[in-house]
Image (tube, rainbow, N blue to C red; front, side, top):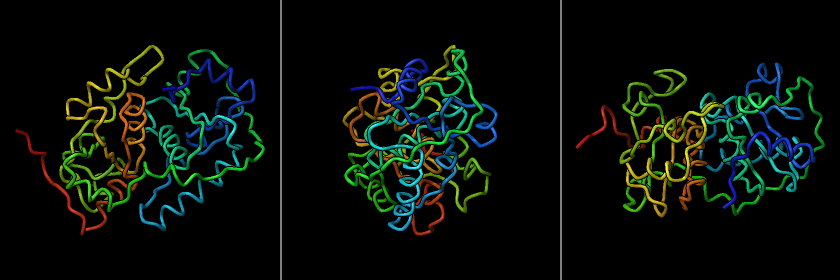
Length: 285
């Protein structure tokens, strides 16, 4: 399987051959201060909050198909997405990878190590604003199986074959905070019933160029701690799908076959009092 992670050197080669559309997911101020030459800024890859109902998914598809097309994605060029570093943007580059995968774009990569890895190589940084030629972006509806709605996650609670994997930070997992946006940003704190937990940071490890994804064997070892094998159907969630996307990429790189994300995640689940939650400290045997 070809890796979805690309090195700075390989991105430089791809870009110089005019075969890449480079997408910077950082905030506009960071982008303006310096970015990879030719990159376009799409911070709302990170900020956009989606609901998983039909209306929410239609809005998500319409918005991002238009934006990705305007950025120059035409089905031929490779989309390469980056953030500041792999652990500073809550997985926002991977959220872009997941969104493009959901929309069925055929060629998507994440810059391994992010902008920090690019600058560590001493490669050129630009402040120029790109003017991309819009591409004819087409949605492939067949790719949508990696997206779960609330009903699918509710069904997963009673599925003995599936593992619901919560990858939020520890204060969210144990129910002392409702979100990274603030302790009481959401009306309820807790977990989806039956979920197991691997904090998203555990999919990465230090390197000379900052945090990088762990190897296939290391990711599988982390997964084994909660009973996940390459054949386990994994149902991911976090707060809004960013950290879950970082884990999604790690799990797919490790060869786990069936991985999907409940993209509405805790931001949506916690706001519907009809949906069940577990509160307090997780049960430990």
